[in-house]
Image 1 (cartoon, one colour):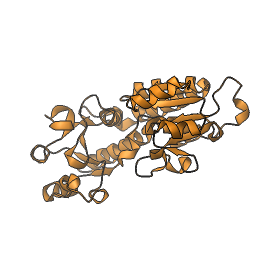
Image 2 (cartoon, helix red, strand yellow; image 1 turned 180 degrees about the vertical axis):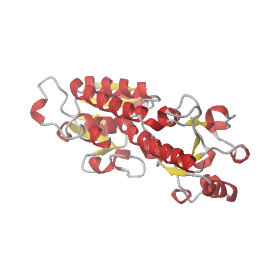
Image 3 (cartoon, one colour; image 1 turned 90 degrees about the vertical axis):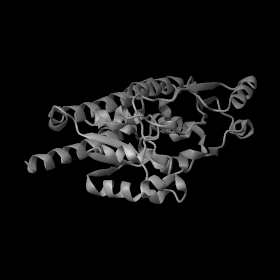
Image 4 (tube, one colour; image 1 turned 60 degrees about the horizontal axis):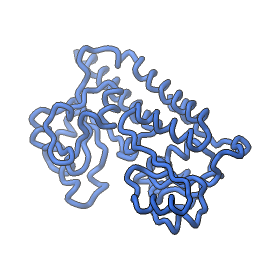
Length: 285
């Protein structure tokens, strides 16, 4: 299934770009970086955010490592002489305003918090960069792979889906309306965090998790990723015992941090985990 999208993420010849297309594009947002890399050839990308080449944050660190990195100051952006600057919703307003006053074209790309939002962002960036057909191909491949997951016999079966929770450092879990929630549901799971009372910033108390544990633990972070107290929830003996007592799946946060078509990889991996859980349950009857 992964081959469908990967086949569409190869480079395009520069000759496909006509005179009306921007040829020196700078992205100031990690999520936009990754959409841009999948849409246009490297020759048309003048710079990406400094996070694009960080393998702990970016799924496309290898593809980004040879491109100039920017930290968001107007001076370094202007030095790249871009004809299109793609900024995120939370890019510093002062920088955006200054660039516009200096005559640079700056477009704001919203953050995708749903699968429909992913489709809209890809379509928007494809239009801004002059490759709408390419954007349509990516969206089509994304939808085809999601349809394959939904069509699997295991996802169609069962009156009650297995229950899962995606745990992060600092006891964070993603509830209703989040991108992680949609990933879990598309893979055929019930997201436990939807029905729990979450604390500040979406914290799921360990006591609540232990009292009514899910069928599957999805780990977005490893306790080894953080040496600070932020990961103490993942090191707690009660959580470790729970994690060892039931199936778990490790899907690094960088795989679903950004709303891009590549998030379907996480959906597919979770669907496989759901299928394995189903087979174990059948074998135990």
